[in-house]
Amino acid sequence: MTSGLTRRQVVAAGTGLALALGAAPAAAAFPRFTRGHPSARGPHRMRTLHIAGDSTAAQKYADAAPETGWAMALPFFLRRDLSVANHAINGRSTRSFLDEGRLDAILAVIRPGDLLLIQFGHNDQKVTDPTRYTEPWTSYQDNLRRYVDGAREHGALPVLATSVERRRFDADGTALRTHGEYPAAMRQMARAEGVALLDVQELSLALWQKLGPEATTTYFNWTATEQDNTHFNPPGAIAVARLVAAELLRNRVLAPRDTRRLDEEIPTEWITWPDAEEN
Image (cartoon, rainbow, N blue to C red; front, side, top):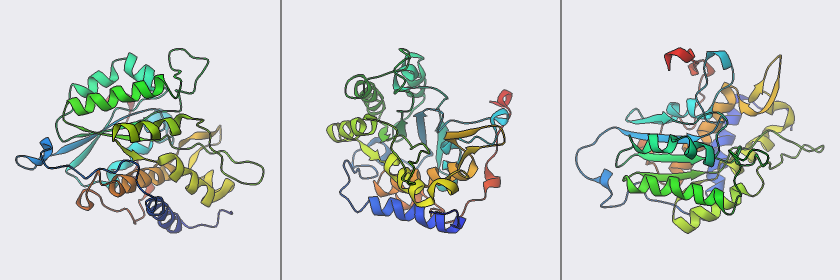
């Protein structure tokens, strides 16, 4: 695959990939909110989509530009009455995020009817780091369950998302999976617990394959000084955020009225990096 794809073709490809994945039975599709759910009662109010995750989603600041977390672009695809609270932070795993009290901080402010999107896996793989490493079929799943249970106990809707795939190709140009058994462990846990699952790994892998080795360099944080195949630049963050928003809609976590611009190009100029001291 060459880099001859236009940005509009990539937009269409990303939307189509999400719809194509939707052709298979959803593992844990939810209605937007079931009758009797706290958000179904009372007057309409602003809801918040909280994100717990790692550096691939996290807010980046001016000293890191052009590196861009995909959650920085997610508001472009959501209506204004659904705000995004991005709690993702660099280098965290399900374990270290919990140990640092970051889930507790989310649960202190989450409200009935809100959503908690959980995406971890990159750093759970750090087998040489006991502060972050988890075993996929035991401690990783146990930790994910704590996020899910915490959201539900506060009347919020948990949503699991498999890790966005890195940029890695073999010599023949085939995009490779790099997350070991963690995505499969998350899929199993989502089925067992009845949690909506966004399969961002498979969607992103298919998009990188469609783009090919050369074109994907324009989606990752490749600069004059580094070739980063894990983190995104603005086009990459926008592309992944589009996949996430489309999956939220496909899984009926969100209704059509909650989303916008899914089939439109988003100007990269909309991405901004605040100074760290403004946070």
